[in-house]
Image (cartoon, rainbow over all chains, first blue to last red; front, side, top):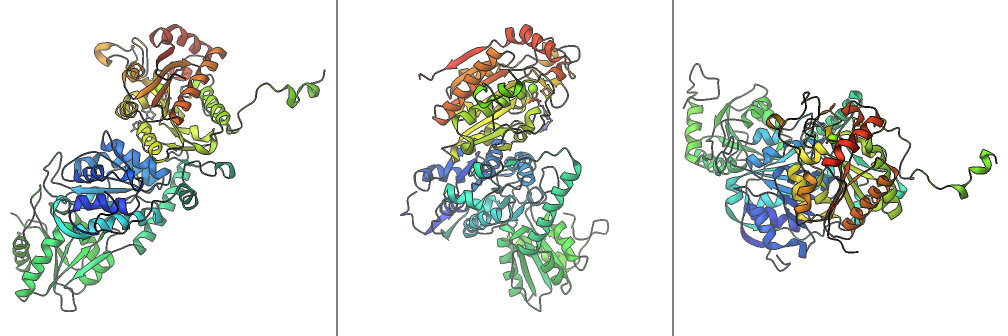
Length: 378
Length: 256
Ligand SMILES: Cc1ncc(C[n+]2csc(CCOP(=O)(O)OP(=O)(O)O)c2C)c(N)n1
Ligand code: SF4
Ligand SMILES: [Mg+2]
């Protein structure tokens, strides 16, 4: 990579993650290869940012190591990220919990594939629970951004960098193998210089980097407490912060939603791209349907969905798994609308006509009696 | 001569390092951890590296190390200190970065991170408190527990068919190309404390001067875990640990 690299380029989503991170002034990357996101580390290795911006790139021995490298680096006030896919992100859960406990910034890119277990290397969205609810221990939340284009993959790296330092919570960029692998035209961000050590010293007085130690009390990062009351106080402080994030950082996009809308699709990532086409096909056929696309999965656009639910007939939740985000959509409706599932899993991805067919079934309310409302027997 | 006449600055030959604060230590009487903490504090002070040191403490009895030595500390999750330290050292090329770990932390749950940080030749120092037991959790078997030694999880003594053999992590470290200095020390006598201090000092110098990874094992006592008095523990260590884990340098590629 050199500074002569063009700003408009045709790239894969994973490549843009790498190139955008360099340009946004990230200080380091730590990761372990896994399909379908290996291009992140490969692109960084090829671009050699350590020779230009000074960004550190290290292939770690495991995802366990990567996330703990992130933890250590974040503790010192550096802007760092890792990238992985489903089984790899599973290994990172302990570290994400520790980062959350000590309120450490860091960005985790998760490019989902089919699961569970080793699963498949094809695109999947079955890691919604893993990202949004987390598999680490304790009371913690992570901000989850959901890009749906190659352009947004890059944009999210900038947004994540800001949010993770603003709130001191880990930020997960939850993508999928399709967005990671597909090529689109993108505009790369301008180069932002990495912060100097002096700037880090000024901006992160909490960080454990020794800066100014002679004029302050020493800093430490620890999640261990002997006194449960102290731990509860810490948790409540964090919960207050989480409520503030819920109030301030919700982001979503409406597609063809207006006063006449009767049906709503809720979808993120690759499912929102497929659903956009389905909405177009249905609108052409005269159906009053629109789409709400959460751009943040946590905090979730509860209010927007609740308000729309008051006046629509039903909601189709499209996701490439057997139904995970659907639970959040149901909660958001506050019982005002029935929510139906549409989607494939295991690495299979719906086509727009699949979504149209599922919409038709929803519209016919073609439900099996002994099947929970909102699901069809296949 | 009166006491007042004797206790004057000119007569002072030894003192507590100023980096060591007055927080009461939670370590048991006779525990090696406290002595090694003091050495670390003394060395950082002597090197004038207070503002340029980032220390990583483990999960184990030393989990609260950050309470006693007034430098910036990070408590890593169990076994992950070497990964943490690797990233920090690469991002802060002018800092002294070291880990302080027990045998369970370094040679069991964190073996992967340990071997790979050593083998990458990370410019960090690792201090390894080998007390052959899990002190913090109440005296269970450690990877370094000696054959026949009794612990809470091998109450009839460690035996090969049930528990396998003690792991010689330090010997393994010496075979790795990324290490420049691997040594085994103890802090049971004044002479040994002096030697251990020299070893830690060299490991820190190596880290700062980017000579590769250094590992300083301190063969240690855990009187509580071993269910002995501090005196008995020192004797037991001398009689049983030293023959199995002999003191001295295992590797030193640094020609000063
Ligand atoms: C993931 C995880 N597993 C288990 C524990 C419980 N645990 C805490 S300390 C420890 C053993 C520490 O032994 P060692 O590293 O030898 O340190 P020592 O206390 O002997 O100095 C264990 C198993 C933990 N905190 N985290
Ligand atoms: S339990 Fe053992 S290692 Fe822990 S403080 Fe006591 S003597 Fe030291
Ligand atoms: Mg131990």
